[in-house]
Length: 65
Ligand SMILES: [Zn+2]
Image 1: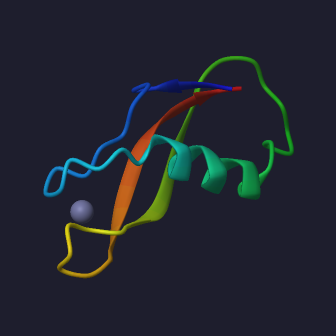
Image 2: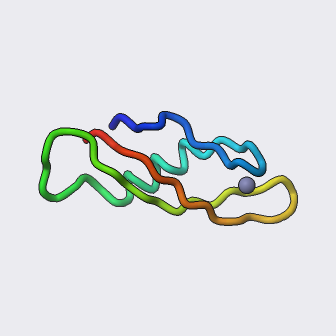
């Protein structure tokens, strides 16, 4: 799975969210009707924050496949 952008980061806390995005996409599974080429996605991940509590964040991009 190739992601674009390759990295996801919370703009507030600068925590690396890439693995969370990948996990969320794995959980969604592969697209049922496979077509080659990148397709857009949107997932909601939880940033643990910088001691101010967790918050959710919407990450968008494209995945291939
Ligand atoms: Zn954050």
